[in-house]
Image (cartoon, rainbow, N blue to C red; front, side, top):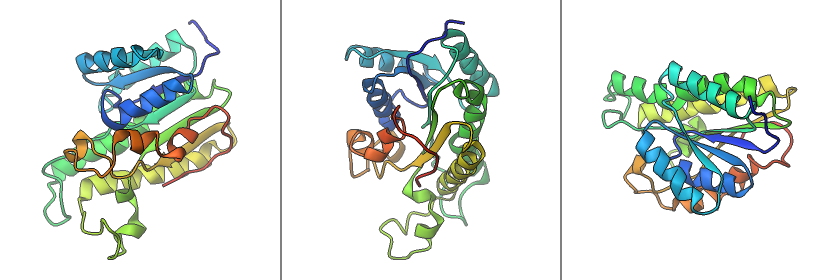
Length: 238
């Protein structure tokens, strides 16, 4: 094991979209950035692109739906660095067979929940032993307005007609995970947040979002603040 005093950050689903911009922003803040993705070719290219900006970015293969992949990633971080300071659970999907509650296919809902919610839970659980070795560990779960039950109950909300059961439920569950994990870890020096980048143009929504990925991450102070080395305390932001 080659332990390091540098900040080590791990971002899932980081080869494109919000994850890629999160990787860039965190690396610019001075972290060694471990860029995780399930596609090795795309992931290595994304890491190489950020490296041309003078950033210390390294690719780690990860499929959050496979326990053995998560375990392998944690083992690699343990062997290479001996700790982890920041985990950003960003990996997420949609499914064309997801939709309104009366029509959404159950297998589609299950697939979305497995990646967006259970994948984040499994990854966080695997990384906790490494985060506990940090002086100030952070877990950031990338959520969405669509995970708010309160807002879904408001007919005047601008996204009130967007009823996609699996995706919305996955983000609501992710918010619950953030709140409960923050409570569990509040005396262990690990901060947990759920952050909302806003309706951002990515492959996930076929680039229909109303802001760029730069605006979604770097333009949202709450996003990078959650990863800042000088940030203290515990809590959640939905």
